[in-house]
Image 1 (cartoon, helix red, strand yellow):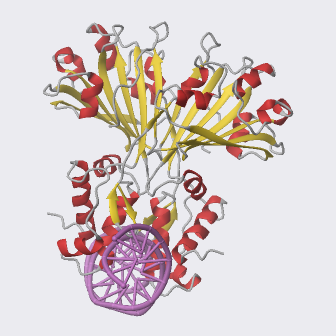
Image 2 (cartoon, protein in one colour; image 1 turned 180 degrees about the horizontal axis):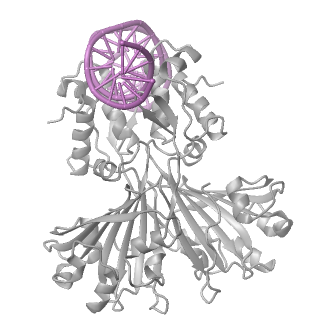
Image 3 (cartoon, rainbow over the protein chains, first blue to last red; image 1 turned 60 degrees about the vertical axis):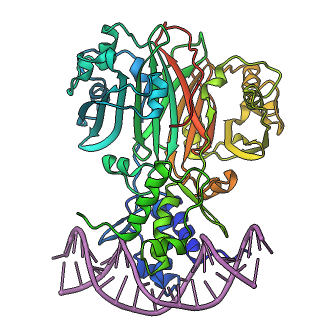
Length: 264
Length: 264
DNA sequence: AAGTGGTCTAGACCACGCA
DNA sequence: GCGTGGTCTAGACCACTTA
């Protein structure tokens, strides 16, 4: 018998109801006043404290002035490997990936290009000097006009300057092909995935709800010489993505499965 | 000039100091009373509300009765691909991976074995019937006696019953090899990575601090016939892991890079 | 206009862990 | 014991959105 606090009780009860389906995604929770009565709590703060637990777990979201609602969760597939896959060269890779899944969704991206001092994480991976500026191609991707992910690519300035890589417009055949034409085919990649809570700027740019963690997916790509050519930092919201990889044993069969199931 | 609330100001100021290094990892923050004075706030709750923002972002952690401290973050490399890599058959794969990195850390795991009704996510991936029970091999992995990750493997009951797969002890040559000996070599895998906040049970089992998101890494492995043989659900805390994949273009060179850098 | 949640006040008592 | 944060009370006024 360990006496757990009142606000934890409230949080636990509601969490259970969400987990077992008593409260379905999209359903409205009792209001703060109703919960105060139900649990015989005399102060609003205590009830609020319980609700905040669930808000920070990403399970519910307050919609003023209606009340609290169970959050919906609809992750889309995010495939780092598609970069190296076969694709028609006519369209941008992001647009292609979306349009080819038959869902009829609208995909677009905002592109900015700049010359910047890279963050130290990028500088280390690109193996540039501390003082060196690098080229930045920053993309914010939208699906049905909702932000989908952030995609910042960095490349050595002398390598891409003047090329189409630095054009602030969709590059139909893909920027990787541009790099190949410049003599640096991308043949190898190292993916790192960090799991963390978003920074305020990411919350703003991605319009993230509270309690939504993100994956920071850093791709370092190499040319045949083993020289890092490009570092891409992707920020992908947890509530809208499943990251998917297919693997096979060396000399194994071709991969075949598409994902025929939903979220866990 | 948009007037932002007081608690947000407090959170923003402290967050900035953490980001720019004014407050280093491990450093102590001002106490609630001190912050109340600094910001001319007359109520404790307001200060606490600001601090809670950072707690839920995983940036700080309260240590009663000392105060709040900036959190440390030391992710270790987590490599899903090592499963298919070469390794000496004498030791368990987890132990091997740890011991082979020259860090001299202690690795151990607690193993439980059971026969259970699988969660629906597992049932769908294993393509078993709703009524079917399956075998569960549940491992909790520790590094230097601190929980590292959770690893629940499921397999069809008729396939593994009576085999070493269901032994609640380390299997030196690896359970994948056991499955191969049973006629189901694992040659192909599908990795799915979901990013979310942990469930209370995971917080308990992994001893997670507040504001620590997790990755749920689900591996479905297939035999040469394309039959799913095993589904493994890994829960890996974001504050202790970087997930790493190496990729190369089909017919490209062998991967070579080890990670020579720290977290972003 | 009404009702919701968002912010803040001004206290109270308690639990914990260190000195 | 002392100071820290953890919990809870009993209010107040405000901001927002929809009916």
